[in-house]
Length: 308
Length: 270
Image (cartoon, rainbow over all chains, first blue to last red; front, top):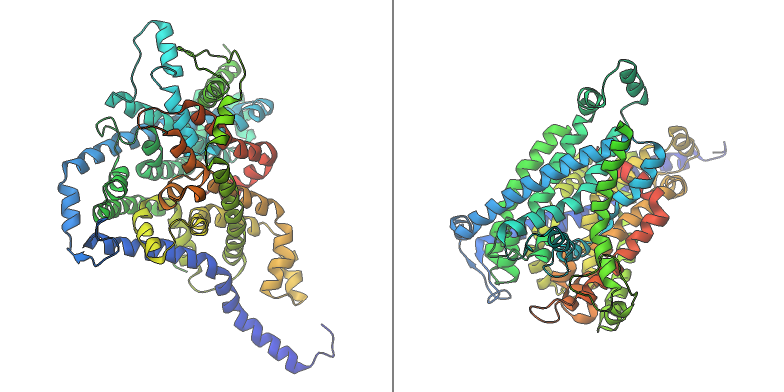
């Protein structure tokens, strides 16, 4: 800035800088917040609006009758809801346990492997993360198909009778859990791998000199360091497994006989297959409430602050 | 058995678990006539399934639709999220943490649950069957990861550079496009790839909101093509389609692995 700059100019510039300090951040945040508030907060309140009225395919574009909490009563006294909640519990616990167990082991083995080995396996392991839910569903559908499935091909080669995965409730539930583990574990590995980098190589050396076995090192040194990452991974996989339904929709469509119909799928099908939009909205608000409990735990655990 | 061998054995078995389903559809997709039981390795290589798929009505159109939607939504996401990340990382404003928290919560509230009210609102606005509306929805899904990515990346820009720019009289807007954007090529590429990947792969919104055959996105069009009759699945379309759907994201992995990894580290929620 040259000396000849008139003071009035300096004054003006200072003035605009001060104005900018609120205006610029606001303008820069505007697109993101516009999207967020319209698609998230407005849409969720619209969800409540639908749930409190009687909205079906019939009156979708007409006047809606206000019915208060009747839809919620209907949803939570429906035996189909309770059955779907039970399925959600089985699916979530099964999928999350396996994802966490496999994800932790594999990311640890990747961390301990030589760098050439790690470089070889890492891109392979990430592939399901790059697969559309449609790819995941199609390939597992064909892995498990009765006549042309790989799994039944092996079972037959061993001399056992073939399994009709889509005709047996337990087998179908096992199939959707395995497919969801296949699809979801790479993210757990990616998340935990960034945690592994905070275990310093010197610790490994020290442990070796002290004669600690691999298991002792893993449980006494690695796990405590990884704990915060494990908690984040656990909460994220739980939330995502709880809300997962597109994979199940494509793989079994909730069948056979609703054996894999999870809670969110129950709501989706009520709305888009049966035209019961209010019922579906009440289900998704129920799911939201359950999610918020998990979100609350997440915030408490991760220590994010919301106030300035 | 040494620890090293055990490690490699375990990693190999997991890699096989990862590759097997993909291998299986690839194997079935190149067999002209799938025998019963099917062979483990294709005996004759045939592209008949792929020809069938690409000559199915609207499949090529749907691939183009998906490429367009993915490119556009990735471009928009990079602009929107880099701007937001710039504020979170570099600027001061009231309620900043509140806004950041709002983005964070989106990560934990799967948008798939608000598909019913969204359908209702979009239907009132006449936005059903609109590819642009889908691009708009994808912005919400991409926001958490990409905003964290840019926030964390901008955090790594050295303070002296920023201070020098302030002394030189560069305002916040100028600093953004003269310093932060040019320094952030890896983050811009990673953010673009993340958003492209998401849009190319997404099924649920595309399938629920677009019913007009000529406007369908590839994953949804594939699902429709597979169900040619109520009880028979078209295995040729299913396997060839699955492989084609995987190709662009595999290309991203092959050519962009470096960016994906930096991006994931920065966008990670840790």
